Image 1 (cartoon, rainbow, N blue to C red):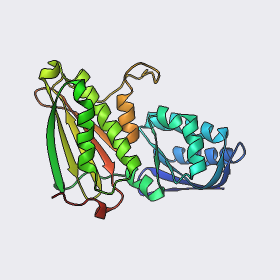
Image 2: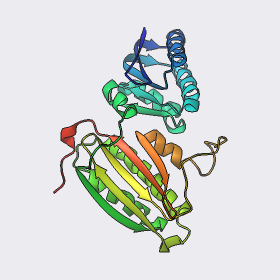
Image 3: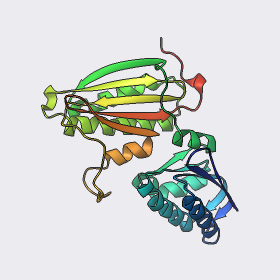
Image 4: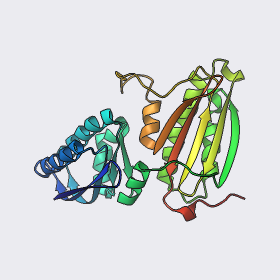
Length: 263
């Protein structure tokens, strides 16, 4: 059984109950196809009441990925239990498809998709800089994560942030630093009531985040931007005045109380 409803924006929630097999996935795909025709751009697939999935579910996810990517949309798989999560992990889809992410439940999924613009100053902000030397990468990643520890952010979310920030730092050091290790990569970490944000700025020629239409998932490089967009809730690129690129990564924080002011 499936029920699809729209939120107040262009996001629809598909609540599925029972087993997702070759019979039931056809019903789910038909319902979602109608939602897409009505203007749905982002899909939350609520799996909290699903106890079984097979390869038909993987085919459904692939179909959604292909349908949403041209729309600039996202697919969030919410509330999957341990067994269903294991099947999803074994499929490899979560690693390869740039529009797919996961969430603990439906509320967290919708919040991550419909993250509003930041308003007002952050509750706290820290700035740091690193030499544009890939030997600094591990230390830079660790420095960012250490600032976020103690905020009650789940370990899995911290890991996502670490990977996304690592990709941004690697791109800044490898592609955005024409002067090599004599250049500097600047990092700003901000905490708000409902999110954390990390900005990484380089001194390169400028990049707007647009990937070639024929980007190859199996290429030796070029997947960093896809990883950032898959792991974070918002990713914005801006070309700095006078040269260089700033990438801003934002991740929703589930509870206001968890973002305590640093002392």
